[in-house]
Image 1 (cartoon, protein in one colour):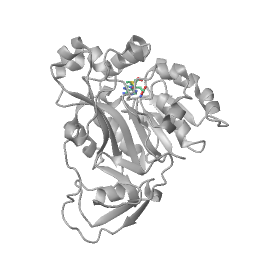
Image 2 (cartoon, rainbow, N blue to C red):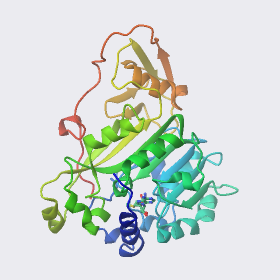
Image 3 (spheres, protein in one colour):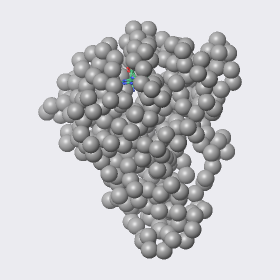
Image 4 (spheres, rainbow, N blue to C red):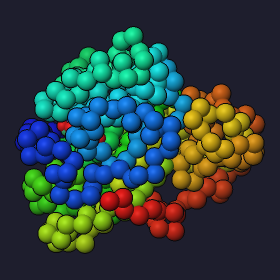
Length: 351
Ligand SMILES: C[S@@+](CC[C@H](N)C(=O)[O-])C[C@H]1O[C@@H](n2cnc3c(N)ncnc32)[C@H](O)[C@@H]1O
């Protein structure tokens, strides 16, 4: 895949000039479901309305245990997720947003002091830089410098998705994660649909076929991508649906850990117990769709899952048992189902 400035310019035009606000979107691809946890509703209620009006995300990019984290948001737009995360990381954390579209950045820059005051901070813990998410080296961002990288409905718009994933891997600290929502297709989207600025701008024709995404993620170094949640996109625009000719689209949140993981889930007789004290968490901790840990229950896990919990910021919230001394074969306790399978609890559309 080659980088083309043509697609960048088309996308800048779409988000900087064609759209004036989320009401101008022509499909429901960029919309976030309403079932937002209460602690997040409290933070979102503090976001400036001008920022919210130009929000074009497709999921929630607020994983647990964020206090003190250094976070990077790829394609931060008007800054809604940057500001929500700024409220969650606390004054000791920091959130940097990168975007290429002047009009979106102008909105984000305008409200830094407003949000610092809203969260009661002496000074902003946010920053925004203009740049391309495929070329973050140009912004002087150092290797291994972020705890978490988020992105919300952006990577589908990139003309060079492998570069974005490679850059994310480079910038994450060991044990950090890329936690991001995006749009995926149930098959490869025909090349001619990429030239339609509306289909591309609405986050549809640039969407990766999910299995190609998994391959690219693994090639970038993220050995065991985990699907956290997904929902069907219903489009709800007959003209656009006709052009798409029956391709199915999903909005999904994946988490990709930068860890020395194996290509498959292997069994070493390991187990973990969630201690139940995650800030803002309830009685359960959701690592991904196949791994929901109830407080106090000891659960057998594969080597990769064990490492995602033990060698990450989640370690203080778990008790760990076992070691890697004896391999027992492939781990059979995990779902192993296809992503976006309705039988796997896929949810409906949001708008
Ligand atoms: C669908 S909007 C999502 C914005 C934001 N994440 C949100 O949830 O509101 C896509 C954003 O990504 C930015 N973007 C798309 N491709 C980009 C790229 N290659 N480099 C930097 N920014 C990009 C656009 O400028 C736009 O602001």
